[in-house]
Length: 427
Ligand code: AFD
Ligand code: MN
Ligand code: MN
Image (tube, rainbow, N blue to C red; front, side):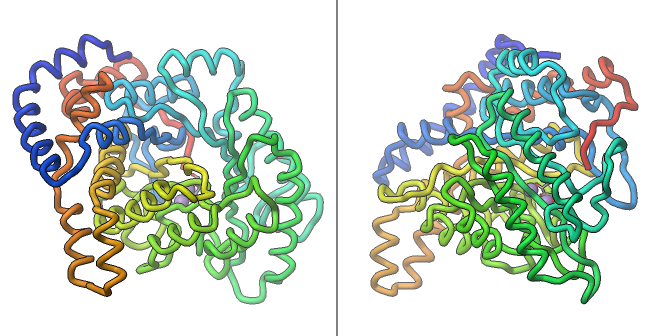
């Protein structure tokens, strides 16, 4: 199924009256506050968020998985699903592949299919947290950190292969997330595990094309419960610094222990020019992978406040991070969930753009705590949704993507096309 331009236009016409009223009112209020609404709309409209290929099917837990129907059965259908999202919001113009789940059979054909939907290839992801059917050695006790050299070598070669697939498709980064660690005290020698990981990453890094980045994720626990080799941002940052200019830390919002001050991590990494990528999701307990902004929207906004400060800093050496959603949908329709996540990201971004940086800097300098809070909360409490809708309208996307998704009965049509019992690869 494909969403046609005239279906979007028709929807926009139908809803334009109400939208214009909302937008004009907000635009006037913001203009009176000294905000340049034109440039704000441009920034909001330009932000693209990559969709991971593994988030298009129903996710599950170790207790089970309840498939929703019409899930994409192969890479082509995953690309076409993202094409649907992108047609609706013009903000999801990139896909992130997980190898070996998404090995392209014919890279040129895959590339041209994606570009027919205006989609490019974001970071490629390796998988050494599972054993594949035809795999010689097991990753049960780790991959890049494994005690045995031949296992480490196998994992290194897999990562190099992932980069090769990415090159064929025009990706510019590879993301390494390791499940390596231990479940019990004394199971693993921390120093050796770290050193092995570092040396393995060095081998992979030496195969990185010169215009590529290596993004290193960290995670405090799961699937290993006692220790994780790259447990926190400090360890990832340490590795990235040791590896070199092309290595960066990737922040996944779900990969922190409760109450961690993620916005402060973001600020520090950006200051050091080492924030390479971002995985958005939300979480109550751990790596819950819930819809972005569904649990802690204020935290998301504060994180965006730091991201905006980092991005708008003219002296910053940090590249613009690779934005991606890394979520899992257990009860919602994955496409609807992703539309909600993109919307939440853009809301937080727009609100962060509204913060009066100069006033805030003054309040901070004068230790005026009350004023500093007022400034950021004033931005946070602004209903920016008409700005998002207007930015979409200007990009020829739908005023209300989720409403149009339902009006067009997209899921019903996908179930008709693909069947009820399809299952997408992923977790
Ligand atoms: C993990 C990580 C990582 C990985 C993904 C696999 O967040 O991004 O690639 O899940 O599905 O928890
Ligand atoms: Mn992630
Ligand atoms: Mn995760």
